[in-house]
Length: 190
View 1: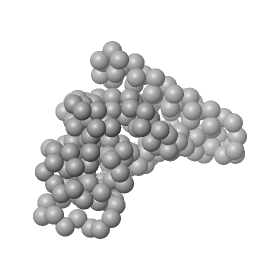
View 2: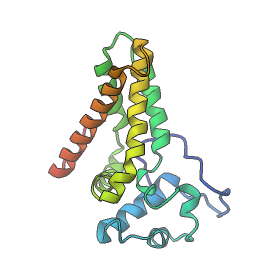
View 3: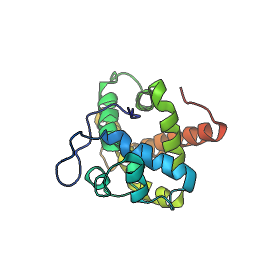
View 4: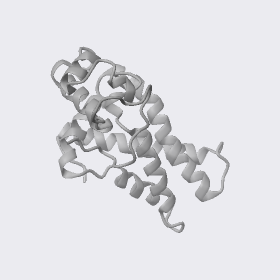
């Protein structure tokens, strides 16, 4: 069984409906196989065929769930961002925005004990190869946007104001810095 780093509703598959007898665990089959395949041979050398072979599925099956090989390590990020948005919205209105963002980001990164190893492997993969770093830019922009939108709603300011953008940028920078430091030290974030 695969456990995701964010329990949300399953991502809507890309492409035609699933026709295999048993639906594959969307969050795990691509991310786990991509990560395990890449850990041995590196991201650039890992093909979609290798991921499909690892999962014992057909070559076209991963494309029902992920747009590309570079998308698979991100799992269900869109669903996780919905969860992050909901968590931010549920924060008490009298809580300062920096504390609300901190609590929401900590909640966003809570993991089941069984998912820690896979998540660490996935984050090491996402944070290292240049090809994935470039591919990550739009996902990081979506993450920052969720934080910025919260600032706009809570403070009643213009979306074009500097503050929402700064809080979004700073929140992501802090989260990535802590994640990279933890990876380098072999720590598990609590």
